[in-house]
Amino acid sequence: MENDILNTIWSSQNDKAIIDPKTVIGKAKKQRRRQYWSVLIMSLTVIILIGYTIFVSPKHWNNFTLGLLLMISSLVFRIVLELTTIHLKESKLISLDSKSYKNYLKKHYELRLWVHYVITPICLATYIYGFYLLLPYFKREFSEGFYLYCLISGFGSITVIIGIIIYSIRKELRFLDKLKHH
Amino acid sequence: MIKEEDFTALYHTHAPKIRRLCMGYASGNQDLANEWLQETFIKVWNHRKSFKGRASVDTWIYRIAVNTCLSDLRKAKKNIPINEAILKDNESDDEIQKQESRLKKMYNCIDQLTEQNKTLILLELEDVPQTTIAETVGLAHGTLRTRLSRIRKSLLKCITNGE
Image (cartoon, rainbow over the protein chains, first blue to last red):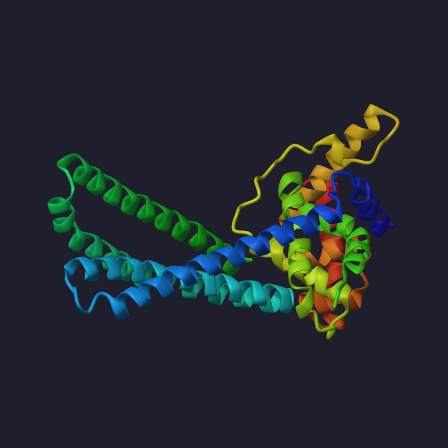
């Protein structure tokens, strides 16, 4: 009788608004294509960067090359770390039972906090220092107006990145707290 | 490996159940539930080659669905008005209103359960076999039976008392 009441209420929901499986397959394929393209573009960037460092920069090594290298490598390192984490999380999601997955998530977000508080600030500081090294060259090569534009857009984008980091730390902290208390 | 026709058959069998499971996790938020349903089956399709058949395909799909709902960082908004479109067609408006109110109460009561208890009762309400539930959640079958009976009682008490 008790079971009947719960089941009756639950089964009063309908099955409308469920999309076609072909649409799901289409979205899945699109998502995979986007992932492959991102990896391809990232890999090409890294290959060009390594190629540039090996063949060109030893002859013309200066602060401009160093600055550029610091900026791109810190960004590439952080993106590769992020992609690896996402890939690992997804592989656990599809293979673990929910109890083990919840335990994994707790460890995952604790590790993420370490990444947010240690790795990300180091990457950010390296990026900012790299940008700082480029500024004298920008000032010398560009007009005053364009130099000002570089300054504003450069520091503006850094401020936006810091904002995004703070937002994601707060979101993940809230989620970790929820995981620990349920 | 799961082929396209197998996927379509699996989708037709499991999508309605998984959508309701996600509705329970999303406290009745249809948009979020539909998003989680889609994410679940996108993952099923993308990882179909990695399905080794150690567990049954049903267990594998339920694990993905539960873990997808569990790992979403967004907080489901509380007290979402229940849209009457989610109810089965009925003859009278009174009956629709009564069902809406009972369903809303049920979502609120389910929302008060711990994550694991929520998973257990949502799968049980979908008539998923207890062995599949045990494998999905990672609990021993004996523990599961006792736990389910307790959850059912507390859920019923919550719904009838309106707590």
